[in-house]
Length: 148
Image (cartoon, rainbow, N blue to C red; front, top):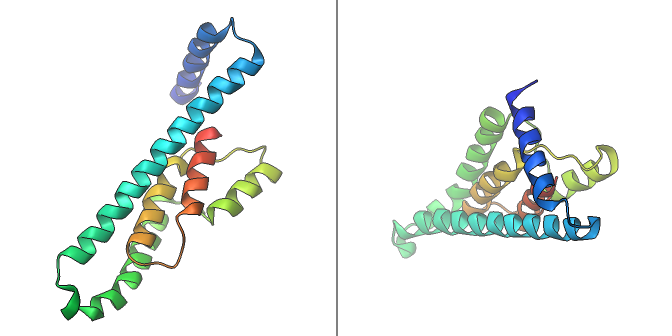
């Protein structure tokens, strides 16, 4: 038995002891509240990281004299995101909504746990450097991974 499996068994046993007097409906509502709070926290961390990246890139030079940097930043962001996925994540992280729908239809709604944080970091890096994506997909994937 792996240490990770042992941890999950201990967490499940603790959760079971705390909720044994609750009905199934009450347990599901409790789990939904926990997942919602954690997904909201993930969204908040994503927004803070995104704002920090944007402000660091724009505030260190006078905007009127450095227009060429605004053309270079998206390329730097793409390179950083690619290196992050290739060397740190080492997994295919497709678009968030597509990945969630695929997991729901083919993989019993199982999403790898690393997607709780990798979609936040990768999405904030790409968007913060000016990539042409929206923040919805990383937020959806983070919430779905937390729920999974």
